[in-house]
Image 1: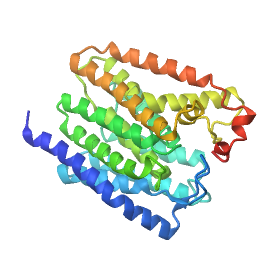
Image 2: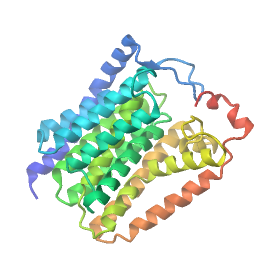
Image 3: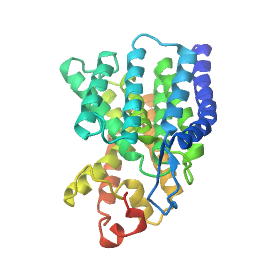
Image 4: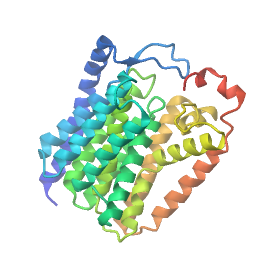
Length: 345
């Protein structure tokens, strides 16, 4: 095993972590100066404006670290360009509701364009052909929007993102995919740097652009994995890696549909809100998202390392049971909807 490749993975992680820690305060100051802020309305934050530019610093840190180590290998340029396009899309979505991509249909069209571009760049499913293309686009769309939904409380998206990135990096490392491992390590480092300012009483948020960027990058890297597992196990590990954002998305969609609420309607019905409703602190709920992602990712790593892919369905069944259990929690009672936490959530 080449020592230079291992050093590259470690370097990408350290540079991204250091860059994120250094750039985040700069982004926060710039956000406050230019009015790139949002006023939180959940959990009695006092209504103080918080810069929602953390995703920009995270993206710059991760991409700079990867490019420093690897440059721009063939096929990565267009993929990174797509991720940056999503970052810009989310940034303008945060700023204005009147521009061309401000409505859900237009945003979805641009997301599809970016996902198709990623498929043509080689970030796709093993199955190939049109079926592989459809599966790739669907997975990328699901992941980026799942992370957009997951970014609903301090530390949640960052914790899950760091854990998923770490798992992808280890699986890629085991398969000798050092470039993928380096990019995932950079994403992990950038997420950890972001969490320094977001985990407890957040002083910065990802913003829509940051959450879309994070979900897209992680999903693209997961699709690039080529573990030594036969089909369909090589595909089944993908939802297992993203079990936490998948459960959160499923719980939100199903609970809103079952209670006659629009799927696009905001609310305190995410997994994180349900955990707080069960008397967990915000910090504990966020850390639990990260721990659950590490657990599911760790089982995927075990399945790949030990050659026992039968573990993976057990992950999906377990998290499905957890999702159903959380779905049964009464989150739409008048007492909940009238609480301070529900105001504008």
